[in-house]
Image 1 (tube, helix red, strand yellow):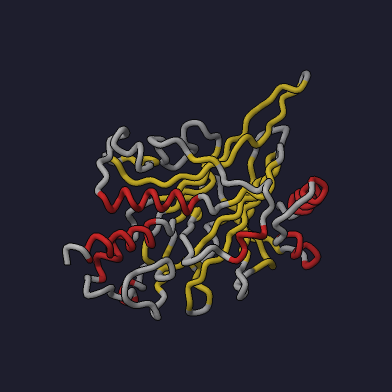
Image 2 (cartoon, helix red, strand yellow):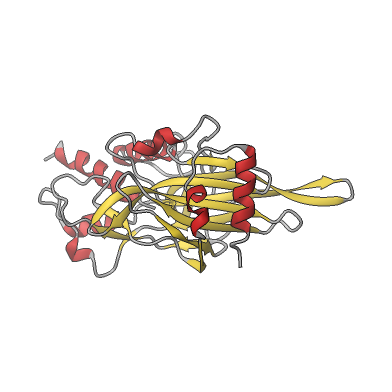
Length: 303
């Protein structure tokens, strides 16, 4: 058991700790490279990493103008008894471990002087993983955790390193002065099974004021599970208590399919995506002209 226990808990940490949303952010490593990985051209790139040691509370972290989502995963209340019990370990331990890590998704909108006027542009999108350190939620990496006051054990170190490798699967598909698209992998409860799909976030900056609106919708996988009929408009500083649903068909050692989310992040309103926009809303490769057309079409969805 001395060998099995740390390996088992590494997998549990990796599985449920990284289920934050996406935030993400909420993203998990698939068993193999996802089929959609080759859909992106070379201009698509990972987002920035939020600086280790940055505190993420309920507003914008230092160095960023906006907190888009802070995700706090937990097993959905009432679902605890349906969580599979791995290799004879207590179900309660698995449920508690689901809340070990948070995920942060931030954006930085900055002012720029243009003659006599000030305009705002989207400088960057950032993601980070973290945990509670002396009562504060701090972004952590394996290399910098001790410097910011957290002594990682071996399992936590491996979990963070794995988490940041997974974070590299998120893609900034389009990034312009006032518009960006971010795609993040997420394990989603589709029907009775958990599957890895993508959430798509559209970030829209109002250039005269710097106001940031974020819409989110669900892209599917090769087997479906997309919903291009609606998008949701997020609250500023969204705190997502990401409720995890177990896949009761799972057994043995926990993997990335044990827990999945069942809904898009909390939002202030939902909007219909016109049928004629569905193909463009799922597109992964853009010319500048196509990106501009998509931005204009998405702005029309804002209430």
